Each structure stands twice: as structure tokens, then as C-alpha cells.
Length: 276
Length: 352
Image 1: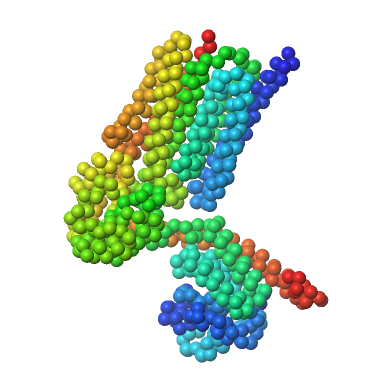
Image 2 (image 1 turned 60 degrees about the vertical axis):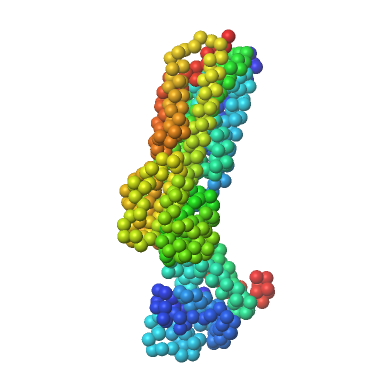
């Protein structure tokens, strides 16, 4: 009885880590947004440090929660959004440093902050979930699918930055923001690689979904296949050079918006079927 | 505050006048001796550049009419010289120096060369033992202020020449220019300046094409590039990144008909075209193509002017910063003067 109480307390208190993460992301986005748009000097280490701090808080939460539930902590919508925000931040930290896209943080941190706050708005029962035996296919399916969403989110953000840069170049009146965002060529490459990364992970997520060993909900499968086909179509058009870069960037944003706005689609990933 | 500045600058005098009062760097040691020989001058420093000649002095010459100071230093003036001189005292002098070092008094606002010029002038004065504790403190403070103004405001940001605007744009499109293939069409002065700007920023693959192949070879050699015959430059289009055109052709030599078939094989690589020819070498409609950016002379010039305007707007922010430092320096000077006049001043002097 006493242990149950402590367990419940820890289960609820671990949300504090997400509050902390949200503070870090909001602070980072406020600082980087202000410096970018006001044309002030930006200390990239400060933004990067806040992103790392937010990421560490998320990781601690996922570690605690994973230990509590005895599996990958994606058992409800709150955890799903947190995992999505964590995935996006992880990919940003990897891609951002590899491709010198430090300013991607200006666009990533508000989104990570919104996802964290949205997650915190989701109610939780407060009771410790029953530990189930781990189904590795289910674990792989959910985690690959959500990390793929993180990559698609960043592809969309790189696409958004590309469109901003492209617009400024075409109007021939580039503002100070233009000179502080990454080069347009770098954004094209980053968008392309993130789309490929997301598509690869999403494909693995889809394939492992069929191996879970439960009755298949064809409605959910159809939705996933539509998303998969849309991203596949964008990449195919890119390979065949039949779509303008501007359109690839625009579709990266639209398709991710579709993915995010289809609430029932997101719920599809979050509603974990009972493990047999 | 017994610190003064006497001078003339591009704001008060034409180049014909400025050159008569300029002090060459080699003549500075002798000029500093002459400056210190003026009655009342305890410390002295001379800043002489193509845009200004200024004498900073500490001692009992404050409030001296500028013309009298110049008369004493140059030992003779023309009758119409007087209106070109200015004299500044106390806070006005400190404020002026801080603005000069920050590039806010320069002809091209925000330029950085003046910082080095003042620093060299200070080094010569220190070497010649012409400065003391007041001017040492003042100039060291001015270097600190100059750096702070540049880093905290955008007074030195943004390119203000057509060449550097074009290279800045290229870097915002491609990132580093090392791997970019650049073709320069035409081998005149403008082409040469552009090619040099690109080379300075790290471009390694510069191709020069001109109707006169010999001239193309000369420019290619000067910029470390390669010359190609004018009839052959279009063959290089498929893997081209940047095209600079400055020919004297009477009509557009880069048209939609020529570009569209080539673009199909380029994938998503952007193409940046700089047209500095008049009449233009590139059909303006080419700019509408996806991934192609054409900037002509007017567009580049407009950007350079906007940068200059933006720099000027930053001057107010720089002035606010400077005002704070002027007050700080004034406090230091007053405190220092009190110590000097207080009983045991020599001890205070040594302690400082």
C-alpha cells in the first residue's frame, strides 16, 4: 500500500521534468527568436545549451517513465507527444551540429516547446500502469514511427526555412534575417536527408507494425499507407527531378501538417493495443 | 577635464585641404616632439589618416581656439583655413574619440580600418613617450568601447559595395564558396573586381571567358583561374554555380531558351547569376525560373544602399553605449585629478 503510494507519487512527479524541458525550450525560442528578428548578436551556445538542457530533462522523464511501465514509454497521448518532441530534439542535436544548421534551433525550439506544453495539458490517471511483458515488435513499431515523425517535423522546418530564404532571394530584398539563416543549398540538402531518414524509419515502423501479432485495424493501416505514399511520392519526384525544390519544401510542410493534424492518426500510434 | 582635440576631417574639409595638413606615419615622431613643445601640452597624440588629422592633447591648452593651435603647430596658415578646423574639449573630446574608433565618424559608417589606424597612432605615441596616464587611459578605453560598439550594434554589419554584396549573397546560397564553379564573362574592370572578391572569399574554380581570349587569360592568371574561349563557355553551364556577366553585348546573351534545357540536368542545385553589364546580359525573365536567382546592378546597388542606411540607423544605439563610457571616463578623470591635488599626491600617483 505504502509502496503503491510512493510509486504513484513518482509517476506524477516525473511530469516535472517535462515542465522543466518546456521552460528550456520556451526560453531558447524566446531568446533566439528575439535575437534573430531584432538583428541582435546571438550567442549560439546559449540556445544550444538550453536545447541540450531540455533534451536531458525529457530523457530523464522517459527513463523514469520507461522504468515505471517496463517498456518504451508510449502508453498514452501525453507520452506520445513527449516522445515526439524528444525525437525531434534528438535529430536536431545530431543534424544541427553535422550540417551547421544551428539556426534550425530557432524553429525547432518553439515547436518542441509547444509539443511539451500540449503534452502537459493531457490528463493522466496518476495510477501506475500494470507492467506487461515486452513485445519487441510493438516496441520497435511505436518507437520507429515516432522517431520518423520527429525527422519529418525537422524536414518540414528545414522546408519552411528554405521557403523564407527563397522568397527573400526572389524579391531581391533580403532582410537581416536572410543573412542569419543557413544557406539555401544547405537547407535543400538537410530537407532531403531528413525526408529520407524519416521515410526509412517510417517504413521500418510500418513493417514492424504487421509483426505485432494482433488483429490489424485496416483503417489505421490505410492512413499510415497514405502518409507513407505521400512522402514516398515526394522523394520519387525528387529523384526523377520532376518537382521544383520549392514544391518539395512546401509539401514537406503540408504533409507533416496533415500528419500532425490528423488527431485520430496520432492516436493510432498512441493507442497501444493490449499485449497478449 | 583638461583633455582636448583639435582637428579637421572629411566632414569639415575637402581632400585638397586635408592633404595639406596630413602627417605621414614616418613623420610622426618628429611631429609628436613638435606637439609637445607647444606651451601647455603635457601629453599628445596625432591621428592622421586620409579622412582626418586630429591632435589629442592633455594639459593646459583646453579652450584654445583651434586656429591658434594649428597656427602654433604648423607655423603658418592660409587665410581661408580657419573654417575647416574644429576643437573639442572634455566630454566632447572623449565622445568624439570613442565615435571615431567605433567607425561612427567615418565616411563609410562602420568601417573597421580606422580602429587599426588609431591603434597604430597610439603605439607610435607610446613609443615616443608622448602620452601619459590620461591619454593612455583614454585611448585604451576607446579601443574597448570601439570593440563593444561593433559587437553590440549592427553599425559594421552588411556589405556596402556591389562586389561584397554579390559575394555575401553567393555565400547565403551555397555556403562556402570553395567548391563552387564560377564563370566570369567579360574581362573588364568590373569583372576583375568581382573575380577578386570571389577569390578573397575562398572560391577556387574561377573560369574567365572573354571575346578577346588573351584578355581572359590575363585575368584568369591574376585570379588564379582558367581561361575558356567565348564560344565554349555555354558548355560549362551544366555544373555551373555562379555566373558573373559583364560583357558589352548589345542584347541578352543568357536567355530562357538557353537556360531551361540546361536546368533539367542540374537537379536541385541553385544557380546564381550576377549581371553587372549595361545593357544587361541576362534576360530578366530568367529570374522567374525555380532555383535561379538573377541580380543585376540595380538590385545589388539597392542592397548596398540599404546596408548603409541600416548602419546609419545603428549609430543612435552606438551613441547610447558611448555616452555611458564617456561618463565613466569623466568620473575616472575627476577622481584622478582629486588624487593628484590631494595631500600625498605623489603616493597616490605611484599607487595608480
